[in-house]
Length: 246
Image (cartoon, rainbow, N blue to C red):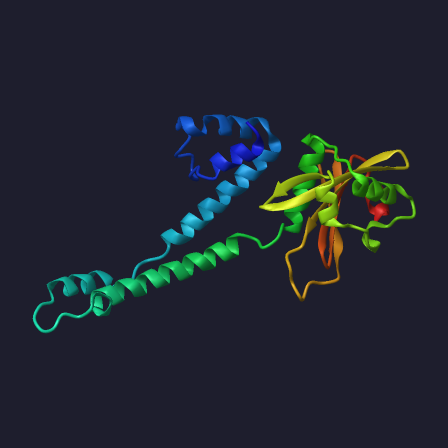
């Protein structure tokens, strides 16, 4: 079973472990236990599902909804109103609109429009530690050559053609529903892993967002953004070695 197949099944797994005994999920759950990247994705999905469910449980229907429905059922005499103009149906419709509006607001807040910068950095560290690295193609080789040059500063503007890299064989992963590319390169005998994600379209996006640093499990990561892409670079070298790339 591949991770994509496991994710397809686990998308239907309810938060709280209520489906743990269901045979349909057994293989996918086992895959999540054995693959750290899938495990991290599954934990985020479960947390998101639990948060949405908790918010929906906080929503109470209008206090008069039940009485309005019963009153409509008892109503008699006179010319019958069309179904959707009867008070009971209007009250029910109003309650449904409230529920859907709040649910949509919760969903928009819970689901990011792009990969969160910290999430990308955490994923990059996890994938560097456990991922199967590789990728090929002319565009990938050209970018690797550029990255390997000591004079190249990563925050000075990298020649990233996302579509060309992806279509010609650059290693591509999925993070939070978005494609992320990985390009491995070496500089001064040290191996680095660059991860690139496209930013969501935003007319007010900043041209450059300053770098942030993270260390975990013996790996160091720097992350930053420009107007069109998000970046994270990871290495087992020192934090200072990573900082010098920028």
